[in-house]
Image 1 (spheres, rainbow, N blue to C red):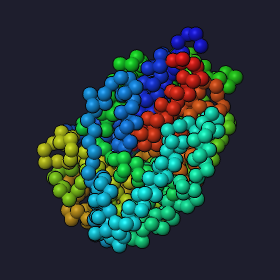
Image 2 (cartoon, rainbow, N blue to C red):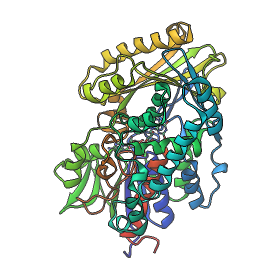
Image 3 (cartoon, rainbow, N blue to C red):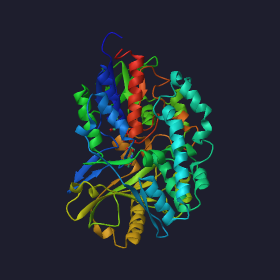
Image 4 (cartoon, rainbow, N blue to C red):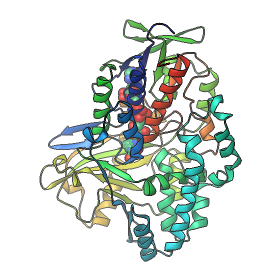
Amino acid sequence: MAATPKIAIIGSGLGGLSASIHLALAGAKVTVYEQNPNPGGKAGEFQENGFRFDTGPSLLTMPFVLKEIFESAGKNINDYLTLNKLSNLCKYFYPDGSILNAYSDINEFANEIDRTSGDTVGQVRRYFRYCRRIYETAAGLFLFRDFRDPANFFSLPALRTLFLIHRIDPFRTMHGANTSFFSDPRIVQLFDRYATYNGSNPYEAPATLNIIQHVEYALGGYTVTGGIYEVPKSLTKLAKGSGVTFSFNTKIDRIIYRNKSVTAIKTGDRTESYHAIISNVDAGFTYKHLLQNESGKDARRYFKQDPSSSALVFYWGVKGTFNRLEMHNIFFSKNYKTEFDSIFNKHSCPGDPTVYVYISSRINTSDAPPGYENWFVMINTPPDTGQNWDAEIQRMRKIILEKLSSILRTNIGSKIVYERVLSPVSIQQHTGSLGGSLYGISSNSRYSAFLRQPISSRDYRGLYFCGGSTHPGGGIPLVLLSGKLAAAKIMNDYKIGK
Ligand SMILES: Cc1cc2nc3c(=O)[nH]c(=O)nc-3n(C[C@H](O)[C@H](O)[C@H](O)COP(=O)(O)OP(=O)(O)OC[C@H]3O[C@@H](n4cnc5c(N)ncnc54)[C@H](O)[C@@H]3O)c2cc1C
């Protein structure tokens, strides 16, 4: 292609930011259109009444993926971000009153499990060897490559992975595999919880998802000085420095196509032509609203799948300092199976939810006034299918407060001095994720990796996808990888930087 290719990216989520940097560095002319005044999408922040909150992600994993983006621009991540490895990844509170600390050091964690449960150090070590094996077998093909691209799918590494398919344990459920390693139901529940990292149900999702435990414990879980929002902020700075143009407060209404080729984007009464377009918006939303066409092969396949879960988040400014809590805390439900049945089969909020409490002011002291803490309190919910969310918010608020007050032996409701709520409906409004599903389709099927939206559209020439609903999946490192894969595909298709 002779002229410098013009690329539009719809959305400045982490996937869109990653794609923009890689493409600009290769020499493309890149414009990012973002409906909100700020970048980051789900990884946003807000400040009010002396409190600062990260709106979405609270834990960073696979930091090397982020580091590599800075390196590709010839920069050092340490000049932009301070990452802190957590020694205690999460404190778990069980309904029977027992408590378990998930230390990131696997030996320390194994000793903690041995001390507090019916399972042993040896079982934990064996389990983490198994999780590592899944990562070592699957990551190269399923995370770091666009395996749906025939050039990759029919390559030697792909054939090797397919030959070793039994090592990634796709034929058992996560729960089934975890019960084969552990006898104490509390330990099984702890490891089943990792299905929620991509909005799935451990009683249905393939055991391959046990790869996540290797990522979190062996590769490490991190927090960021200043809050997770520093990640999109620093990537936006890097993108601008690499030549990317940003158009904030610009909602794209339509992607224009002719003869199955995308040609332009439309915002208000303005139409801009582009050689290629990346949608960083949820794939379902892209089909329904931006293309207004759900009849293509990718779209039809996409809408046949179950959506991933959504969330209710209460952002609470709380008076007092709660020394029993860590930065990340989980208060488990009594019956995990019933909880997931509610979310995925009954499409209603669970009567006894598992509650996650993240307190960033534990490390970033300026996130709350002295003597106060900023609590991010989240439960998993179904996506919006017309439930009465005002009523659900009130119902869940009461249940959560009763649970936390009983375990922490203090009336938490009376300590709340500030409150804001994020629901599946507001997640869709703020980020465009259909029904507020956090990660596109769920991974409840063993074929989900093959059913996810591919990086490059098979229905429209010039249309590409990145972000949580796209290959390789949701979560900070994976959406950063999806942006890189989308950029690489465009560079190859348009001979950019060659
Ligand atoms: C409550 C919550 C907790 C989470 N916890 C974690 C965690 O601890 N660790 C982790 O790794 N991940 C976590 N995640 C997931 C992680 O945040 C996401 O996977 C990731 O940030 C999504 O990035 P994305 O690239 O898909 O873009 P998104 O964040 O989905 O952004 C899409 C962007 O597109 C914009 N947009 C949409 N429609 C339009 C339009 N028509 N025109 C212009 N712009 C548009 C939106 O405004 C948005 O900025 C969490 C998510 C949530 C919501």
